[in-house]
Image (spheres, rainbow, N blue to C red):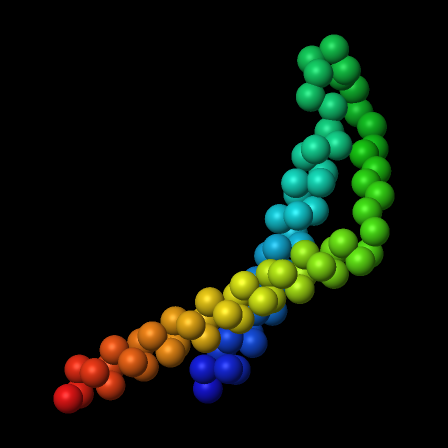
Length: 82
């Protein structure tokens, strides 16, 4: 059950990591100078492999964090039973 929960948390972590990465990319492309005013489209070009690496990193962090937490809680409850 711990691994199923860790998988779900890993998928959520991957999605959140990609969304956060896209927001950072978008904000880095916006013109922040007060002289440049007006409405325009901002285009961002990024390789698909980079997005996949960000998603993979988010999944690994979420999965590992959940498995580690689950093992630690299991150890604490088994030591309290003694």
